[in-house]
Length: 176
Image (tube, rainbow, N blue to C red; front, side, top):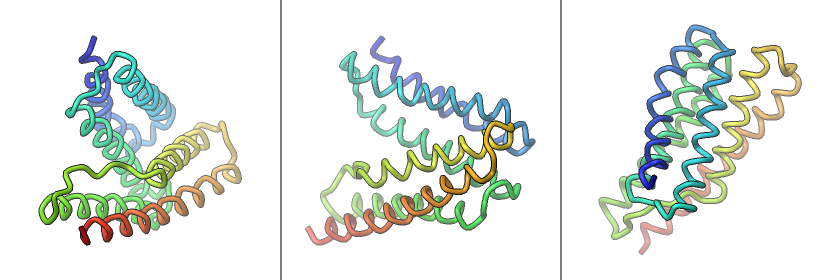
């Protein structure tokens, strides 16, 4: 049972190529279902890790990696197809690249060995997830485009703000 949280994270990671395939081929119904399944497994793995006392170092890396690959890949695939704004995909991917650079620099040049997500990073990720779900719901006729637009700008604002916040955190870490 203690392996279950990591298995759920690994399963979410394994779903990524299928999601990208579905998005690229504009099969938005199955893509929406797959995103919902991924979201459920994301919630369950954390809940199970805490309730079973099964938190692990592997899970601490695997869970956010699976989230980033799914989200970044979804933004990239949808942007390349013109389904979402390219500027937003650049912002999302750029922020993630910035975080990766900060984490690597901290690992190489400081004694810092963890780079936990900030509240703004978590809010940004949540907004990105909601936006992707809203886009897919729109393509499935479940939401009008006018409803999706505020989610786009919320995702953009939180992503930009979290990038600034992470830059500030990295600057503070480099001073120590």
